[in-house]
Length: 107
Image (cartoon, rainbow, N blue to C red; front, side, top):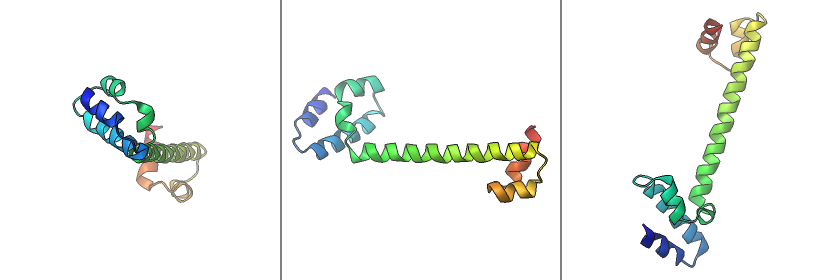
């Protein structure tokens, strides 16, 4: 692995270097632990990689989606506590009737 890290350091094209470093880190993750990979491959190079950026953006998108789902659930719970009908809650929040009934049963 140290030989691979040295070869990557010798790549002159910065974009190619960052993409190769990120790809190597991903593949190495199948066999090595995180600390070894971080020690051998400089993370600042990997962060410039389009692969790294795409993974980061996907993670942010997933986080936003989870946050919206949590928000809808909390709104539905508040509406249930206020005595609003399940049909109206589904219409307003976009949650399924089944999901709202499950929330109702939890309370």
